[in-house]
Amino acid sequence: MGWEGAGCGGGGGVVMGVRVVCVAQEGKGVGTGHRVRMERLAEGLRKEGVEAGVRVWDGGRWEGEGGEVVWVVDVRRSERGWVRALKEEGVVVALDPDPVLAREADVVLAGLPQAHRERVNVRVAPVWWEVPRREGRGREIRRVLVSFGGEDPWGLTEWVCGLDGGVWGGCEVEVVVGPRFGREVRTGWRVVRPSGPLHERLGDYDLVITSFGLTAYEARKAGVGVLLLNPTAYHAGLGRRAGFAGGRPGRGWVRLLGRVLRGGEEGVWGEGVGGRSAVEVVRGVVEGWGGVGCPGCGERGRRAVWRGEERTVVRCAGCGLEYVLGLGPAEREYGPDYFFEEYRAQYGRTYLEDFASIVERGRERVQVLRRWVPEGGRVLDVGCAYGPFLVAAREGGYVPAGLDVGEDAVAYVRQELGVWAWVGRFEEWEEEGEWDALTMWFVIEHFRRLSEVLDKVARLLKKGGMFAFGTPNARGLSWLLRRDRFYRESPRDHHLLLSVGVVRRLLGRWGMKVVAVRQTGLHPERIPVLGRLFPPGTLRWRITGRLLGLLGLGDTIEIYAKKYG
Ligand SMILES: [Zn+2]
Image (cartoon, rainbow, N blue to C red; front, side, top):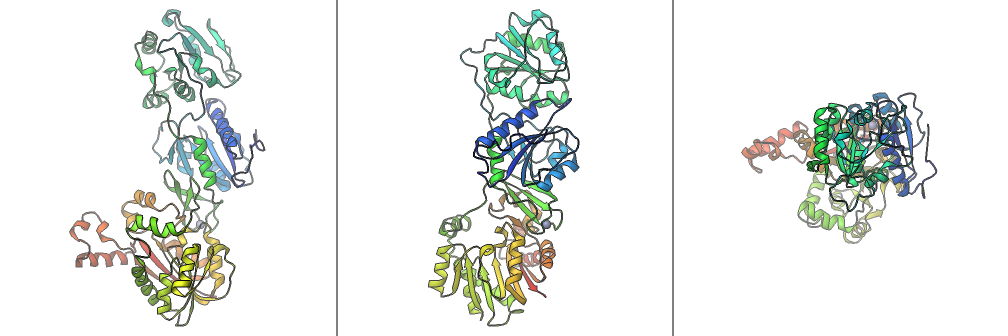
């Protein structure tokens, strides 16, 4: 078994040296389709310059890869312990998973209709590879292919071959005997033993008789008629939901076959096969790669709490931090566009138009800080943007300085506000020195490596210095009322979803103690029913707002922590 295809990567390592390992299952009762599909996925990824290979899991002992891996798992029978071992090494992407895998995987892709209802990230096309088309023969059926996969454990091939010759009405029938049949099939029909991929030849036929699975979709994509003969009620249900004509072995099915051959069954002619390519989606997971382990504590155990088109939110089993596994590149620019066009799109006015009200909020924050940081203290505002907090801090008697990735913003701070500021990313910033306070207003959730950020915060702060930041509250009212919407609407560039309890635990590891929490972003009007009774601005609305604050249900929070030791 082991690694196949490593090193064959065309151009390999184009995407940061993260490896994709496609895991398939084989053996009795599993069929060969899953392995075929994983081989096609690995092949498609290698063509895109992603290092990818296939491994087969037989349910036995499993050796890890010893590196950073995106696993794509296509198995019929998984085990919880095994999936957790995979998660230790990387992101687990499950394609059409069983219920165990559907719960444990980070990312779930569905190509086939699901038999169970776990949340799916992306619906992908069941067949994303090219299939040569049947052309120019209308709906006439002359050539029929009977194919029940590489193994046919139910003996459907024999059942079809045993039908009375008269039912075929003069058609030419060919029968596939797969590589894992392990038996001979006695038939008067021509036997095909495919040496290459069967899908390349499907377009030569007019009708394919198969059970629910990849061949059915490949035939549909080839524009060939498809009639299913399903071994179990489970397969029959999936086939029906996918819109295929067919049934289970019996007299009813034979009558159906008769109607099909006489041209009386429109249902065998499907509409083609749509959906996104799994190659493209998995490539996105590789591009969204943020390393293995919790950004806060490094623990690798985690559980998906929400899955969507663009990302999965997982909760760390160690510290409880919720963080994002992206299904695409996450880096973005915070240039002038961010503060002008995008800000306006989101808040209805530009950042600078909003400047005065942000300064006002800054004044409140300075008042809180003054409990611990005396006048004259040096305050570094990380992600200072155009400097509203710097203005408030200077007014409040501090000596402020700013740091931001935006060159325009930093130039504005220096020239228009006359405050010292640097251009740069905090993680890479090389200026050192000792600060009385470090502040980050709605910045911390954008970092991917929280532990590196906190290392630096702890290093830059004086003993007794304050770390203060604001961030969306992942346990606020919006989360409580509409969890699905809360996660779906969390901005794409937020990698961390923080809450007070998690922050307390994490900061403790860096020698910081939370000394004050402010609940902000209080929105009583979001409470169903009450919202209508208590319109914004009324006394009842204000009282309810206070109550939400006491309950810790602000949609944003401000944390003030003191460095000890
Ligand atoms: Zn953690």
